Length: 198
Length: 327
Image (cartoon, rainbow over all chains, first blue to last red; front, side, top):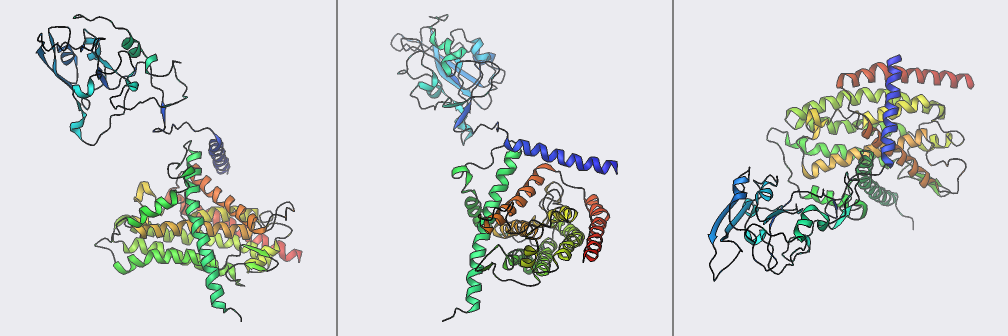
């Protein structure tokens, strides 16, 4: 009898719980329209940067390829010639490919890079229909020449959409300014730090 | 020139069916919304404002799905089973009175033994489910249909017992008569035990959580409708929700005073009161589903036979004794 009574009480407690949930604010973020604010050091899609004068930072040293734990990066360097100078150093990356399906977004390439050429942006919306399309070559990784140095990746005209449209006011562990420019990589982007070859 | 009776009935039926099917569509949306809110989700909100077009999207999806018949199935019974389920579910609305004005009762027809007809029809509805599972020629549906038969028969007994208490108090089996008998006092107060039993058995009778053993996804895949797809599955789906609405209507008529107003607020039309009460029942259904986990099968049967039936019988005996003394 006692247990039966307890069971009935438990049922009503359960009903009270679900009823209180009915009126609670829902934590869901309606994703495509509103996006969650990412952490300031979020590791997303890569980007190859340029110097002020439009020269590529990458000197084709392949250190990122060696550092990459997932073997996602392929760099094939080539010599700069006086008529065709791509980078300030001796060499430049003739081919630079990152397989974003292999990449584990650890950021070791960024740390290995002597010229701060490769950086991870907070862009994360890369979905596509074919596996091949996830191999990002220089045409998609390199900052377009017409883009201003120091411009945040979501302001650039190369077609990659902004991932910081409407940002959900989520309670975050770190209260930071919104947008890419406020992030650590955004700061890096603004400083025109001279690399080894610079 | 007088309009022939069959034409009046036909038009009334068409109107009622239209309203009932629309109610079904939005009861489904209502359920998904309420379930979502109770589980801290927003529920469907992509199709139209607040997901209002979700039922239309679901219907379109259902229509274009392939209609499969398993090789081992008995084709004739397999095909006819959804229609049995749906036809009986729809048939109940022929005699449910929705409201009453000075012009008359709002129902397709006013049967003087209405409650008996209702229970007869809902009992036939079991055939749809059991035949569907049996004729599918597959293991899980068969288990589901066995459960359906056992569960629905055992719970129908207690349900009828709980309703007989109301019939004794009202002294009539006509649904309109029962509502009129509750003009002063709703039967939920003298028949509180009966009401509780009715609520529980109604959930079991319509195969809803926590008594949805018949279609238990986790153990029986989809139960009796595992093999059904497309529109045939849709018919079962409609039937389930119509049954839900039917038992809500019966509960309203028998225990909550039908279209009688509360607190003398009689300026609000009876149909509104009726809808509010039915909505309350539907909400309780969804609320229970959001809260309680599924019963174990043997416990379900034990609960039905060893608890509900004795309590319902006692309640019936007590009611009969009190009424005979009072007279």
